Image (cartoon, rainbow, N blue to C red):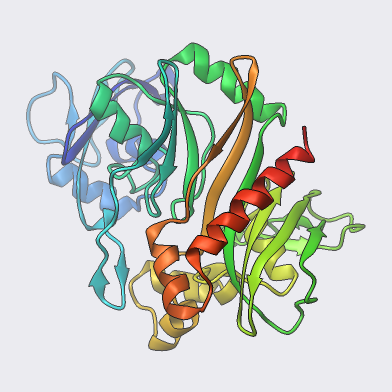
Length: 358
């Protein structure tokens, strides 16, 4: 399935596909299913009946059973809907949709991505995306160099042209990039009370189907999973919560969240690892219990990519952002920790960490 072009507007996303030779004779709904992997067959059929699908040059009403031929061009239209919304205790959240620009030149954009903004369009999240925001602003393609989870906020790098995108992505692939995340955790009984530690538990996805999103950890000497290493530095703690920095040395899925839980510090707001898969699904379906909200305390997991160090144009660049508004408000409301003192500690600890990895 070849993508010919994509068009974004304020409330509609349009993508045009060309059918390859292998798709000749395929049903329209089956063809669409190759691209719309996260959509059920019923939703795909509804899109066809709603005239949100167009086979270019073929007049009349399309049906799920309409046959696709080699080199047919198929336009899929997505309209902004409730799938882009987020809710907390039954109330729609007012999301931040404008990223803060941390650094910008002719080749590179470094932003502080808001929570619930995707790095790039994926699944049902097509509009509130970092690449889409800047493509609409600059009217040309913006390249994602790496990604962070939708709920995770913080430093994200974007390329303004293919040459720079290729060069910077090689930095990530060659492990030339050092990342540091701010996290807020609840303290559970297996927390060791140390202020610094290294987590080396291995990680894997043993489940199949929908549960494959759940990452499990195994002992460092286990044959299961893949190796993973995260440095943890605690900045503030009381009898209930810890605020600290997590610096991953590897890039496993959910690495910080899983390592934090393994050491008695599950992240506040983490529906999978402070909660469980069933709770995660309840939130996804807007069917969370009152007890779920009380346990989570925040609409999203408390993880913020606060710093990133990378070689750029023959010098080492350190990009640093501040504590986001939602986490700062939670800290002020729930703890006696000073935001200004916390920011000072972050500055000192981040620079100390990066000086150890010159």
